[in-house]
Image (cartoon, helix red, strand yellow):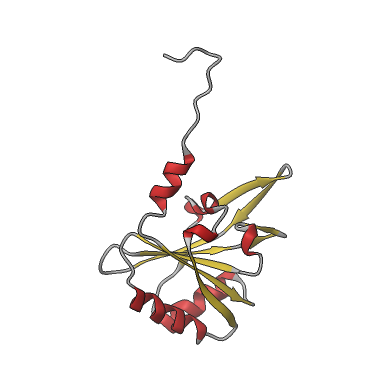
Length: 149
């Protein structure tokens, strides 16, 4: 049993690694609000993204709280879930290393093959207002623990 002076630390690296197991992540630059972007996704791609306030990401920086909305869509068949994060809130970034990106699209829960990913990227690029779509690999993301909900 730990005495009162001993601190127990949660191993967030293992938690983060487990969260990102078998995921794909896209970065999107689009000059629209989050709800407008999801509306376009729903209409153009036949999805049903909805805001999920239960998994909203809250970060505290410089004694201030920042809230990053997360929109969710679970495919009707299979176990693949899609999450669109706002990357910016009130001048702060969820992933500061990707300041130029407005949204992050995480695909989780089932394997996404390369052909399906490229089809999604192509469909995204065809949406009005979308200027850039690129895949983000785990090695490029310095603050990926910010995406864990």
